[in-house]
Length: 246
Image (tube, rainbow, N blue to C red):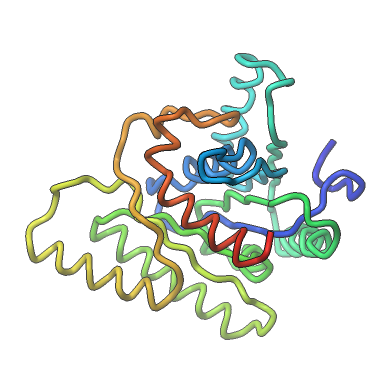
């Protein structure tokens, strides 16, 4: 059964995890957040939610991981569907997102998470941004990543300026942050950049660089993974769930 069956899946929110710079943990965080929603957080008072995960990244790393997870834990323990979607041209992109937005107007039972393609420079990917509710953008405190993320913001702002129907908001996630790294001047620059990001959207609490976060699956988060992401995910929950009266 796929997400195209409207008798099964109804969508209330579309979160697009994206950044044009690779290596920032985009796919990993998308999977960790999907696990977080699907399993809920009893301590935080967050009930489990139905989740549909769309992997549009051609690397298909999460689809491969899902196959391993099914082999390890069995299909009965899988909490949400993870489907790969090959976006080959503009028409495919438009059709996918229009379908999702139509479902969004129906029963509010499923949250859609999309892992965007790594190469966002292709014009035909614009509908992904136009019809999403939130663009979740992980980044790290490296000059090359910050420069690339700034360029990514400019691309999204240009698309938004040309499409009045686009209402997507940014949620920036400082990810893979290494404690104690950076000279005073760099730290000051990073703080200035954070202020710029805050002016462009929401800035989530930092997620620090931990080996445990790289050892993820598509079924559940370990207690340590949940603790490491707790503040960040609670911040996103507050925006996505509470502000939208879910």
